[in-house]
Every structure is written in structure tokens, then in C-alpha cells.
Image 1: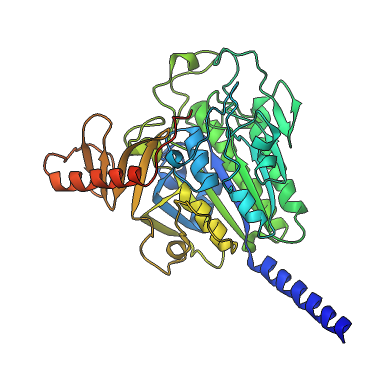
Image 2: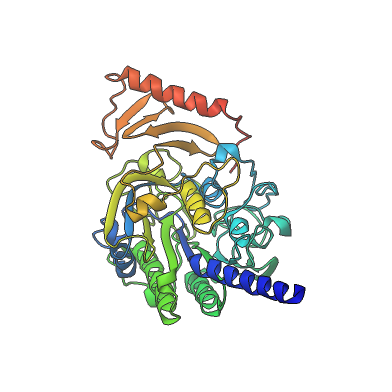
Length: 435
């Protein structure tokens, strides 16, 4: 009798696990580097053709008020930890740096692994590399193929003799790197992960090295875009998205997979002198569209990025929303979808209700603008206060281009938003600045 009871318990446990695995969606997260708000057809580009991303948008949802951070490391901190940069000690993570994410914080990959996900990454990391435990395979990813930081961390753009290695797992495996082939090789890696995932859900994170400068793409894409080399690079990324969607369809996994595409920050305009060499030209950058500012600024063009999600059976097709969301919320939404409790200190919100149409309003009612680990402003509803050079107040529903500073006419709103920043600081001290 005891043996029979144990057999029944094992069978029931196996059925429950199988049911959970089926219920947990696969996840493909596509994260571009320095791609601007206006660089996709679905977001208004007049010259860059992005048919695959436009199709993804038509089959899912676009968010037009989606926020990241204005530079690489803070953006990836928000995405993979679900915390504002001022709440996280990361430190130097580029060439020669020995910083990385704290071991006591749960990454998105680590959280998903607790729910039985196979986790894989291809592409740029930029969250620590000096020790194996700081690399993706030490932070919850079963596999990784990519670069430890940005593709410009070599001569002539950075005066260093440290080689830029391509890694597999925790091992540097290739140097020098043919950057022309990176987008194609990353795509092949993710397509293989999708194809080989045979049981249980998977999480595939592709962090493109492009269109970060220096621009590189394979010869088959060169000269195709009316937007020059930059457009060629974006159209190569669009090809990559199409190849991944095709792999999902070919393997019969499209209907059970969340696909997200977004960018880490806006385009890199007003380049530093160090970048204007080695074939890099000032026009090798994208467009913030109708927005003001660019990378390294907390104007909308530096922080507001394209966002597309397709989630069959949950997200209706062809939806566009101006409700707020942020990379912090990707963390919270995906962990919640997988049935994982959010860790203490998470700054993200579950957007599934908004995406599905169950609620017409985003749970994100405010967003704190960070430059590195410093808070430079806050948005609450349509109102944005920026505090870098005095008070700048914008009503973003009426003035998304931030042309009109209405602080002098609205002192009470300025005071209230300043109080909100002070409350945020009071809730926890900021660590030293990071890269």
C-alpha cells in the first residue's frame, strides 16, 4: 500500500510539473544597443525598412512611453535586476574593471531557473567580467556566447592593450573578433537554443552589440538601406528578428513564446572625440524621432525607447498604448508570468494586465530618471520634472519633444515632484557612481 501511494504521489507530482512547464511561456528577449526611438518603421522611420519588427508590432503591442536608462550599464542593471541603478552597487564593468552585480541580488535568469527554465544568452553582457562568477554563466545563464562589454573597447577608440575576446561560457575563445559577423552569429546561437529546447520552458536573451559604434554588419546587408551604414545595421537586426521568429514557427513554439524587442537607450549623438576615428563618422547614429536629447541625457530621447511585445493568447494584436512602462517592469512581468515571487526591493511592476487589455491603466504611475546612479528627474502621469540645470517641467502628453518648460507657471507641481524625488532618496542611500 505504501509503495502504491508513493507511485501515485510520483505520478501526480510529474503531472503537476508537466502542467506547470506547459503553462509557463517560453521567453525571447531582444535588446538592441543604442537604437533610437525613431529607428524602426513601426515607430516612424522614413528610410529604414524593418518588416519583421513591423510584423511583430502588428501581431502584438507597442508601448510609446517605455523607459530604460541613458547608458549601457544602468540600462542592463534595470533589465536584469528589476532595480533602479541607485539601488544597486555594480561598479566598473568595462575594460580593466573589476566590478559586477552583487551576489545577493537575483537576476532575471536566476529567478526563471527556479521555475524550471533553461536559460541562454547571446551578445553583449557589460555587467562584470573579471571573475567567472560575474559573467552570465555565474548569474543564472546556462550558456553564453558574446562580448563582455561594448564593442568600442579597443584601439583606436579606447587606449588599451587588453584584447576584446569573444566568450563561450566562462572561457575567452576568439580574438580578434570579426564584428561584421556578430549579429548573424548571435542569431544563429539563439536559433539553436530555440531548436534544441525539447522539454520545459526556455529563456533566450539576445543582447545585440549593434548599433553601438563602431558600426559593423555583414556584407550581405551593406548598401541596402537609404539610411546609409546605420540603416544597414538596423536592417540586419531586423533580419535577425525575422530569423528568430521563423525558427519559433518552424519548431512549433511561436504560440507559446513571449517575444520582446526593445533598446538599452537612445542614439549616441554628440560623440566624444575619442570615437571620431577608425572610420566612425558623426552621422553613424540613429534618430530619437520626435523626442529631444540622446544617449547620456535624461531628456526623452536618451531614455524613451521602442518597445514591442508579442504574447499569443494574452496580448491582442495591433495594440498601441501610451501608458508608462520600463525595463524594470520586464523583470517583474516575466518573473510573475513564470510563477516566481518578486524579490524584496524590486522596483518593477507586472504589466501583464495592461498588455492583455484586462486593465486600461499601467501600474507604473511614475518613473525616476537616472544618469548613472544619480536621479535627475521624475515623471508622474504626464508631468516630468528634470533637475539637471535648474527646474525644467514638461507636460509630456502635450509636449513629448520637451520644447516648453512650464515650471514657472506650475510651482505646485514642481514642488510635488521634487518631494517625490526626496522621498525616493530617503528610502535608500545611493551608492557611488558607476560607469
